[in-house]
Length: 281
Image (cartoon, rainbow, N blue to C red):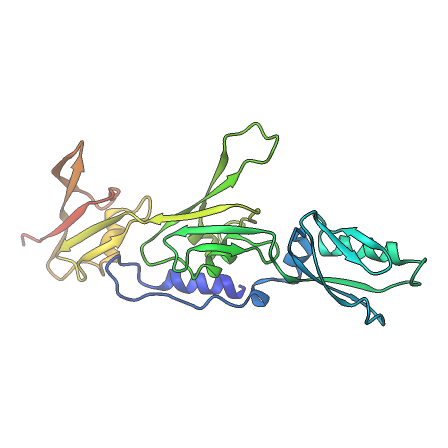
């Protein structure tokens, strides 16, 4: 489990009561910690990225190079070199082939990203530090959430990604991708690799309230499919006098508040106020 996943996993282990005062607020790790070698190798260079190019035993050539608005860098001896749209490994090969054999015999070239400027995603909603996140390599959903300070306690488990339409695509203005980020943090499923311009949003989670003969009355985040039995467990279980057969909910049905009798297997609805009553005997 990597550092980013560990941070989000720690969030999942924090009590999820909606009225809890505890807050998981890790400092986002530095970009170097977030970006693996493999992620960087898949990153596509773009305008305004700053590249660190090293040519072994050639100090005059080994220096930073800024990618211009057309996607080119200007390199000694060989002039303008197209870097935009290439990953660092492809650019290494291109520079090597252009230098050899006319200028340097068997040059050893390394290209690294010194500053990521060309690509970014937006993270909004129930995160601690919403805003634009520079893409440091092939960024995933969990990496973007960690860079945004992690989800808040009130965050829904569902995250939406609005993906801009590419020129020529016969699609609506944007594609909507839905992801359960809590499942990803627990290792369920494959983390989603983001694209430049993606807009991530986590809505505020729906809640329910439980009171009566339970150990910890309060408001709780409602996960889809939560049963009454699970809701009671979230509230610490029944008190010594609580009945698992005398449970009612105040629920909004067609705009009106009504009282509904519940069984343990019934699914809790958003906005329910569940009351666990006392045993008769």
